Length: 311
Image 1 (tube, rainbow, N blue to C red):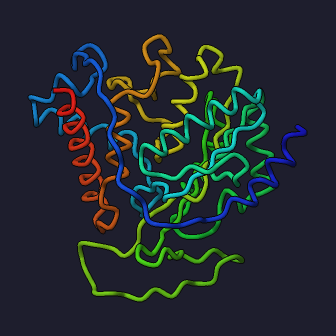
Image 2: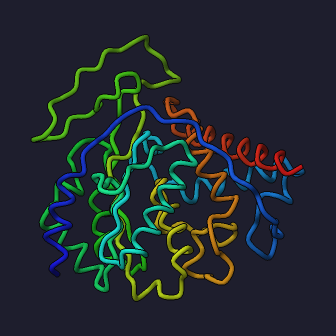
């Protein structure tokens, strides 16, 4: 467990770095699948507008995991990836791949040596590592600010779950215009002063941005994956709030790669459209259902834009 002191110290340095986000960029689509017996792709169902909308809406409901009472969080313009306990060439590949996906979404990726706010840790004993880190640095996992994490029961699941990959994300409500924290953190941040600029029942001045994402990989459980497959899976869960218990088996998504590595070689156009939709959606919608609807519509627009580029 000599890795623990280094990681515990690294967790302390995860600090908010807030700025306004950019609009997502598109990717190239590939071939489609049947929507009955096999996972579905976006291409063939473009002519079925209602079917596409339903599929996207169902996918968003299945995988999106915002913190309680908050909207979907995403990164601002800055992201720095750290990968530890792997061979240098492997670590560099994974960090570069996550950074490339971030850049495609309009996020600025830090240079080597930057202070990571996405930290990927490889280990052969993930439960012990997770438990030790939480015990040593509890405030790194539960900041105490309202709506900043998934809560106590989710943290227990993070520690005890028998999963090949586990992750813990911390986000914060941010005042959209100033970029300042909109929530107090006991012992760290004083209660913020927020100037209300015109009341609205439809929109909020607050948006949700990631502060950090800790990902622990059980290397004994991902040995069936190639490094590119693992890197793309890690990119997907680095860039969005993904429910670790989501059932995505009926969709063509890299999220299925742990169960079907022969089929999923990289991020699919479904994944790319989802991430593009998340980063393009209006975060200021006050109604959480409306917010998810905005994400779904952004995904559909992203897919149609991708489709048009191939015609």
